[in-house]
Length: 389
Image: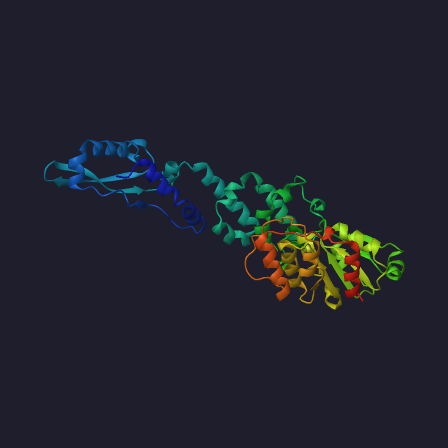
């Protein structure tokens, strides 16, 4: 037989539907609970005292005893060996008030009603979102006022072009940073025509300024550095500025480690129209939108380990014409010292040539690593001079 706790749990399963019923102005109650447990003659005969105790518990917690809650409907049945007995037929929640009392959510329901009416009066376009996520306007009750301030600001100026903390909103300085998930959901609806939907970064998505990653690069052509950068040959600039560079370059070499950036610049003789970029491992993603790379001879030099080839594959996804350098079996056999790498969890095919793929599988299977720094400088210089002509 069903227990009062099980009745309450079944009622809790209706909570979202009850909130939606308010939004839709429909009547949810009365509502029956049908799965209350079948009572057979054998059950009664074997466990009559236990059954009677359970029935008393149901009655004591019902509306007839507690004034609000569930209504227990009983039917008198005749049993051969024990005679007439009252058995539960159904349990009914008659009114919304009974329901809220039963699940102890009277306060939450009132919060929902207040917040719903307030929000849709200001932003009627959020009605469908509330219908989908009604609990969120209860869970964010304490933040509601500030969230609506943010929404109002973006609604008035959907392309602010300001840093988050420059926005003219009277909220805590870290409020938006700390509440990006729900604010994102709302702004996606409220300023849909201005949202950069392809961007996952909050600031980029909503036309805000942000602290951009820097691109560090060295210029190997002294004429270029003197003509365009006042002789400065080692620079770090925001990625958006790097994307706009317009200098006479034809060769671009990306290296995974900073040490190699410095070594190449210091030891190689001048190479015409060439720059070397510090890729910083998987941060090569920051370079994915450099349009002028498409007209360059593009080379990538990473560590000889599984991750090095996985980064190469990632970078080749942005620029299919990129070539690897110093990532071959000859270099590996010459300088490998039995170092261990980081096990790779990557599965599936990578964007590698056949030779690269064979070496990748070997390194991955044995968890081997040859770091760039262990390749001798004179060998590096000779190989690079051969490709950067």
